[in-house]
Length: 306
Ligand code: SAM
Image (tube, rainbow, N blue to C red; front, side, top):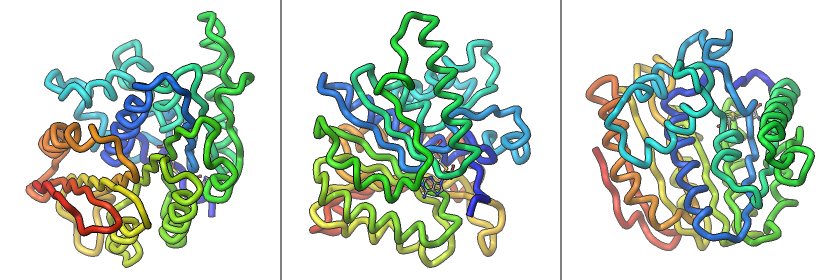
């Protein structure tokens, strides 16, 4: 049950897609003063050392943040995400990579609320410790405590289960990131059940689901099932960096972000950024992206392919 450790994958191409889109979603929320809740059902450890034992084992960041680090021609929206990572590496050397909780903490404002769930005992402890350190750092700068205050709550628990009690959020504004490991094939079903339930409790919420694109049958039908969640507008974006190896051999080549109730600006931003990611992260002629939008009552109404 606890075999998955995100540190092995930190900063890879899938993290780039996920965290870049997450930053866009929260920046859109920041356009209104009213506070919002950010709920991370599968938060991970929060920050990863790229020179640590886990991340350096397969150096997966070389498929993701690595090739973007020195680029001077980043599209503006992608530059915002890379700048966030550069700010946590003031020496200029790429040493630390942020998890989704850290990205959210940096983009969300003082009035917003972060609710972070992580089941793994070691990672939930590291996440708590990381936020305590962030807190101390902020206190030294005269910024109000976040962990001791109400802004950030880290809970060791099952995010699928806990989400029910958090919706709708007090301000009726919220973004939910759901990013399970999918090592247990039940995760696919749990995500669809969770979306069905959550969109009834809080129809106006924005839900971001990360998913791997794999050969297994549950994965192949997954995005199609999410497209049929009743009453929802959706956007689906996938990034493939190489031609899949035979029988899925060769590691993760492709992943997607499925967004329920996406900001209306997101599609245009992705049209600008996805071709760039394909060009810079693509490893062979199989590199490509798919961008499609629709609602549960219709077939996809638009699709850009490369
Ligand atoms: N969202 C993180 C990020 O982007 O930095 C990475 C999350 S990682 C892909 C998935 C995490 O979910 C792992 O740390 C794993 O321990 C945790 N996990 C697995 N099952 C869970 C559950 N039911 N509830 C909460 N966390 C869970």
